[in-house]
Length: 269
Length: 134
Image 1 (cartoon, one colour):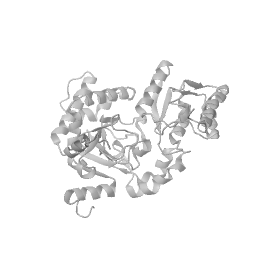
Image 2 (cartoon, chains in turn cyan, green):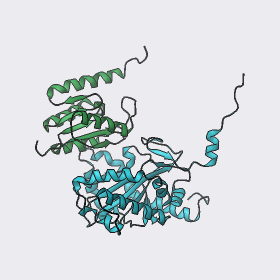
Image 3 (cartoon, chains in turn cyan, green):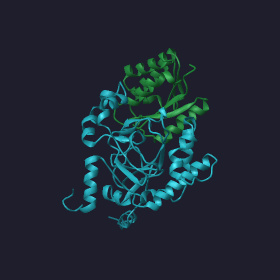
Image 4 (cartoon, chains in turn green, purple):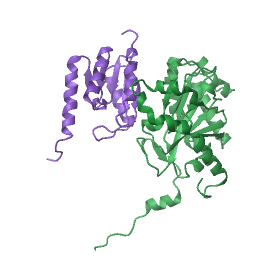
């Protein structure tokens, strides 16, 4: 990819990412994953006045039996606040794909300040996330999304993405859908969208410049996924700025040294 | 009106009149406006960043039969082209909805309000050509 400077596993990963627009791999830190999943299940149970579940996977998969569509957003927003309040959460999340992030983005990173949580109950008509690219809404094209399922995700219980070569053909003509709406774009190109199978224990790192989204969950169990953005610390920011949306997480010593440097001054000239 | 519920927020990613406001702040303004005016606020649609794109505005307008109206962060989020703006007003009024602009605390409920909104718009556009230093 870079004439030998990027080699081995990094080269393989990078080539796959650029070709497909995403990579799906086993998480790099199973203990962190378990900690996140178990804490989420405990918080969700507490929200419903229940004890910590013995089978967290099953509990999360079947939350639709306990939470109505009407109460879902309030439930989800409360869980987002509580899981993000855990002081270990963001670091644990980063550890799940640390090496992949270093290979694909760099090792001096900015991370979104809050990890976001999506919950899609089966047949919830309000959970449709129309096809979009995050860059359309102000994200920098230099960001990647680390998408983490808390349950097995597949077909309509997962997300879809448009492969890069198809995206390159379709995205430039977005303006032609301005009158009809984005659903018209999806209907016209539905067969070209790829639903991603990402099971619990895996992560998805994807290029959010590609058109992606999700449909109504027509599977029998509930989707629970986290998502969080990472970018190179010194790559251009768009509407999502450093401070208000992103925080530096891996500032390296040479950067600290450079930022602290003050040249000698006070020459009279 | 019985089946129509709530006001969709409408915020954006493009600067307005040369200033950029973070989406989180725009949402605070919209939600505060809804609360003070006892309007049921529905999660904001975010207009895309591409110049002159009103795809998300059109999505909200298409949703109007299910809504009581829309709360824009600012009336300056509407299209700069006067004919397109008038089309937005008309579609809102024909659907029986109410258009609110949270920042300017303006409401468009009837024909009589169109001229007021347009006065603000047209003066603002003229100011763009006026001296800025006294």
